[in-house]
Image (cartoon, rainbow, N blue to C red):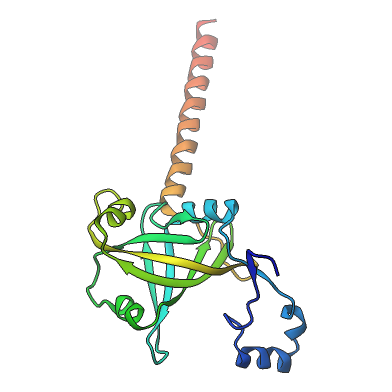
Length: 201
């Protein structure tokens, strides 16, 4: 195993998961699996384009919780080859994720690009910081945040596109429609100009 790879065994594939894989016949597919730790250039680009992410955490006794986080592209940022960061924007004030992280730092991020039918899972350990410089660095312009989340990446994996419905962001659709309408207007102007020339002739 290289310095920048790790086996999913023990991290994601617990003994119970491994036993289930054996029972259902897929264990051989994963016995020598290695997942990257370092954030590649492709993954960094994928992260930079995302407008939302699902963040999973759990309490000390294992009660799971999944939270949606969103913002303009770049709200989730790569800080270095093994660290992600995002501002903890003010929300419904339930603080379930923050409470979970106070007793169990393990998290998983689930990122999905519906347009290109791509998804990425990232496992890591998260911590909360209220360092003003870090919060200011990660806080989107105009947003309110008192703290930030820093996530130490332990492994990541890319899923196949199977079963991902293709969907498009409203602003991307609006941009495409505007481009189409501009082209139609341009063509209509050309048609009118040609008709005018024919009339003059």
